[in-house]
Image (tube, rainbow, N blue to C red; front, side, top):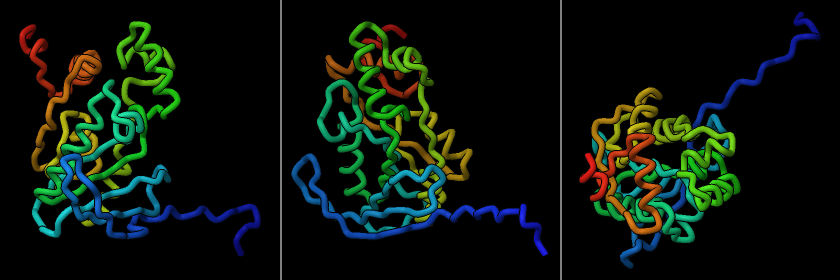
Amino acid sequence: MPSPCLQAVPVAETPGIRTVAQLPIHLADGREAASTIYSFRGLSDSKEHFALRFGDRDTDAPLVRVHSECMTGDVLGSARCDCGPQLQESLRRLHEEGGYLIYLRQEGRGIGLYAKLDAYRLQEQGHDTYAANRALGHGDDERDYTAAAEMLKALGVSRITLITNNPDKRTQLEALGIDVAGVRPTGVFSGRHNLPYLEAKIRHTRHTIVLPDVAEES
């Protein structure tokens, strides 16, 4: 007879698909795109991430954009970053070629919306985006792509072609068991408001972005 002092240890739920629904969306160029949206259960961080699937073509390594939430860029069209244009470009490419958008709820490189706004204030005082994070007691980039790998596996996808300029995404996904067969860069969306931000991404985290002034210095 089991000891009354022993308690059953709950078994972690295997990540899986929770809900599937059709979601027509409007692209930035005015076209309408048909997509399927997925929610998930059992993700290791318990956050409400979601995936969109475009097209029904089965390929060996479908096109995938793993995109971290950016309320200011994705929703408000902030010119301080390149997140909104990257998302819109990815949606267009996925509509044309088929594939998946993995949308992760990890705002501000994982520090949250309010902390990101605090970092904005520090940037206005002369810090770059990474120095601002450190001044607030955060790491340069606190994003974790474990949930993205779990979502892909739940969708039956273990080999992908990744849309990114961030080498850390490939490194993390491969360590989590996703075979990244190839990488396609996003466009370079630079302007007077986000140029220091893009330069900092190149300098600190080796993003594969080529800016005219950076190229001239190297």
